[in-house]
Length: 158
Image (cartoon, rainbow, N blue to C red; front, side, top):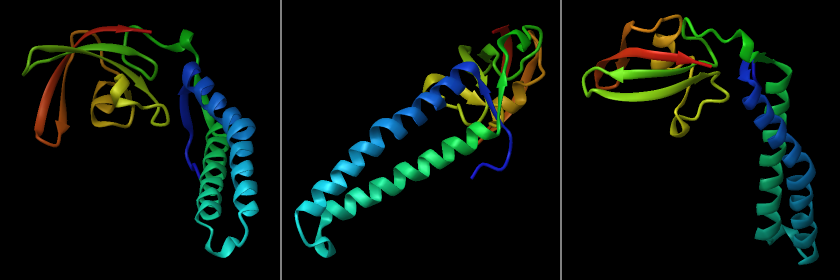
């Protein structure tokens, strides 16, 4: 279960609520139907369809519990509270990778919402942690597996 506060943006909260609703209303029924069909095949002691459906049911129920736990401990960041003066959770930050002279735009989110492929990075990640509290023009050094890199903050927006 989730032991600490879960920081979410409004979009992140909606995404979790939508997933939870889908799991409870759609996936549970689909899995129950698969179990019912597998039982109809007869002897369940050597019925791989039944075993797979029961495993899937356990995974769905585990995910439901995890999402419900996250929602109980959720703190939603109000967009009006997101500063454009300093980097905070919910900020979209454009940085310049000093070494490669490449611009990258990251959105700083709570760890539950992080999606590096969508350039949403966790406030707990090395880059996210280094950017928090910084201002436009600041240069931050970030420890990465290959050593260290520097980012210059070019802009901050909501």
